[in-house]
Amino acid sequence: MSILTGGDQMRRVRRGSLKNFKTLRIRRLMLLKRIQKRKQYIQARHRIRFLKEQE
Image (cartoon, rainbow, N blue to C red; front, side, top):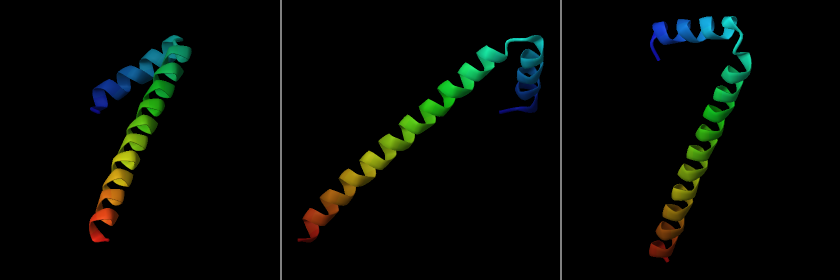
């Protein structure tokens, strides 16, 4: 993220759309969690396949 967009976000919050800013942040957090879960799921599948091949 560039400094410009960060400053724009701060100005937007000061203008009074704090609720909108919070929902955006929550949505971003949920997206991050979903991506992490997907990564863990893929890693687990690879691990199972690897263990089966080693037997």
